[in-house]
Length: 387
Image: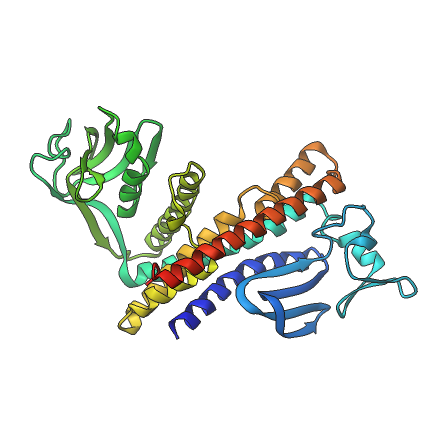
C-alpha cells in the first residue's frame, strides 16, 4: 500500500510538470497529439479537443507530445510523424488529426522562440510552484527552524572564535574561501558545512559567520575541527529555533526560503555529482525514489505525520525534478530552452538536421543512463538499501 501511495505521488508530480507544458502549448495553439501519464503501452486513453489523453502501464514519467517537437531533420513539416492524407490535407496521429495549415503554422519548431522558451520552462516552473505550495502547508503545520544558537560547547571552535559565539545569537551569513551564503534556515548551515568540508581539510581555513546579537551585527572567524566519530567537521554549536509565522507575509517569505533551500541543495548536489564526490550509492532513479518514499510513508504512525511526510516528499522531489529538467542538454527542457535562446540571439533557426542528430544522440545517451540508474535501483531494492 505504501508503494502504491508513493507511485501515485510521483505520478502526480510528473502530471503537474507535463501539465505546465500542455497548458502553454494549448495557449499558443501548438498541436498536441497526446498527453500521457506513465510510459510504455496504454492502459486507457480517450480523445478530447483533438488531443489523446493516456494512462500508460509503467507509472514513471509522462509526456506532452507536441507536434514538431522532434523533427525528422528534413525541414518538411510532413515528415514530423503521423499518417499524411494528401486528399484531405490532414496528418493523422493515431486518431488525432491536424490540417496541413495548422501543423505548418503552429508546430513546435515553427513558433516564435520566445513561445518555445515559455512552453519549455512552464513544466519546471509548475513543479517549483507545487513545491512552494507544499512548503506553505508544511510551515503552517510544523513551522521552520531558524538558525538561532541554542548551545555552545566549551573550548570548541565557536567558543574560541575571534568573537565568541553566545547562546541566542542568530546566524545571518556564512562564508569561506570561494563560497558565501545568506542564512535563513538551520538546514542551510548544515548544508554549507557539508559542501565546504574539503576546504576545511586545509590548514587555517575559517568559516566567517555574520552574527546578529541584540540588534548588533558583526563577523567572527571560526576554524572547524574534524570529528572522527561523526566523520565531519564541527564548530561546536547546536542550532535551531522552531518558528511558526503569524502573518501572511512571513508565511510567504519563509516558504520562499524553504523552497529556495531545496533548489540550492539540488544545484549543489549536481555540482558534487559532476566533480565525482558522490558514488552510485548516492544516486536514485524513479524506482529508488518510489522505494524511499514508500519507506518514509511507512514510518508515519498517525495522519498528521503522514501528511507532513507527503508534503515534504512532494516539495523536495517536485523541485528536484524541475532543476534536473533545466540542465541545458538536448532532450531535456533546458536543452530546448538553450536552443531557442540561441535562435533569438542569432536571429534565425538552427540547422534542423544538426539539431535532430544531436537530439537523437543525446536521447540515446539519456536512455542508456536511465537503464544504468534503473539497474542500480533494482540492485538496491533487492539488497535492502532502501529499507
